[in-house]
Image 1 (cartoon, rainbow, N blue to C red):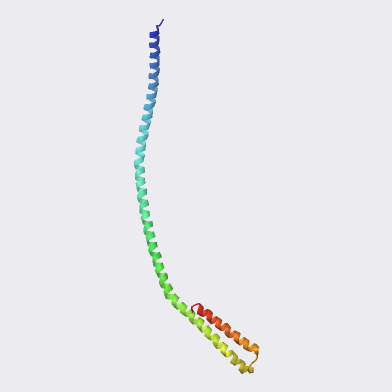
Image 2 (tube, rainbow, N blue to C red; image 1 turned 90 degrees about the vertical axis):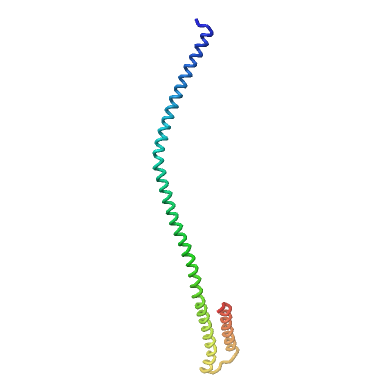
Length: 159
């Protein structure tokens, strides 16, 4: 039979064998993992070089298009500035004559209305004699008041 020291030595030897087997399995798996990692890194480095080349071409193309877009926006800014200037000149050139024509037209219309109102009583006199009475005088006064109101409105508008 085995003594207590021999039994303890045997147990320790068995634990060392189990530990060594466990470490061997772990090291084998670690070696496989490192091999696979090395292969993946090699494949990745082989694929990254063309990918980086494509990426740099894409970035340069994007920069070229952005420069073209910036040039277009600069041109549009210039065009809009020129349109503002042209609009200002056109309004200056057209607004003055249009206002003068409008004022002349309104003045001419008022003058024609005055002339027509002055001639209206003369026609009545020529046709059948003067009409007298409060109604005729009221109508004439109303007509003159209406003409003056039109003149005041025209003057109030700046014409």
